[in-house]
Length: 163
Image 1 (spheres, helix red, strand yellow):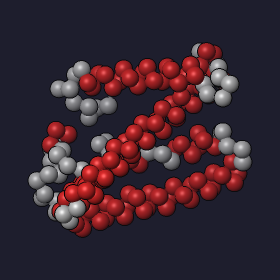
Image 2 (cartoon, helix red, strand yellow; image 1 turned 90 degrees about the vertical axis):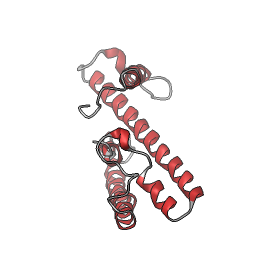
Image 3 (spheres, helix red, strand yellow; image 1 turned 180 degrees about the horizontal axis):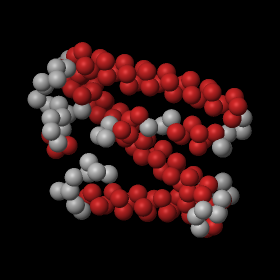
């Protein structure tokens, strides 16, 4: 559950296919790119981390989210003595988390928009602005996401493992 956001994204291919000008050509190309990116950025990087950092390292996750002190990616650079690269890696991890949140917002907004077009959600969510953005669906998704975020901010003692 903790790193589940890292492996999401393949479902976005189907959502984006609905907005593509040539889905027959673009979807297979996107699927191939996603496969190689997962292999390169996740499988290969986890292999490298597994080979370089012992599972007994005291800075790794032990029992609870509160036990996390350093990202494993950052830890690799710290062990190599490259503290500047560790700071850059922290920025990359933060950017990845923000990107995952952004893609989640895109997918949620487009799904709400599609539901409204099929009369399965209020019609107000089917309205788009001049640039084709379903603005009311985006606002609703943003409000719900913010409420979910604030439940964790204002209740940090509650476990999020059930979410």
